[in-house]
Image: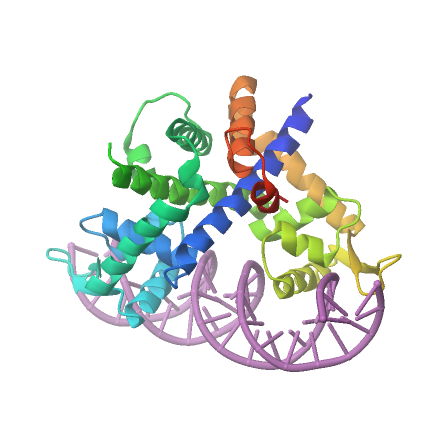
Length: 153
Length: 153
DNA sequence: TATTGTTATACTCTATAACTATA
DNA sequence: TATAGTTATAGAGTATAACAATA
């Protein structure tokens, strides 16, 4: 197999995994009456102590205004609230409400029971995750730096 | 590590992979002035002889009306055209125009040159390829069944 | 009756540009 | 000056429901 052919197959694979993960998350979210993006937000809020809108848009790799829109919609549904940042008066902490927490728990519960990915062995998942990270960060060696930290959570 | 923790890691991985793959494809598409979804459509059109709207929505796991919208936009930009199906007068074949083909070629060319794939050695690329295939096909173990088939293309 | 595709509608996701308030 | 966040706007992606034409 030559290089061009290999690159074409990798594009194929990327689109395939895109569809697959999208479908997986869509189904995960549907059970909770959310979109996959909203579930993503909920999830990240539940994994961080102090999540600002800025940090959220960094994690989601989207524009700040997009984060505002998403938070607006979730707030309108009573799943999150904005509270003032203790030291920086420009910033706001985005918090899950009790309803938001309940929905987050439901997502976990549903995943535990029904996700086809849950049947994948742990080694494969972690290996894939690591490889994708390696590829998108362009650093196959394990040297950690500030940029890496920013890219992670 | 207990079960709940393992499933939470699964969700983490899913969202992380989603973000990475989305980012990769967005960048891939940007160079051609397209969205990642449009690039996906272009790509699949170039890989199939007879692509109907129905088949496209199956591959992309979206509603038929969504496929219509996407085809509309691409047609408006002169990248695809609708031609009548030779035997089924309900169906339409979606074809790449010469401009569409040119853009498709540009995506390949750009990927070959600038994609993070290029920074990986051949061994890593093959490993990534295999893993993506494995995951996108949904089962690390060789047991194939109807549900697996339905989940694929 | 079932399937292919479209239209109308409504919502979510998304970025750009211009803006306010604060650091 | 730089950063956190919002608003206005516009376009893309998405599904649902109702529909026409054809199988």
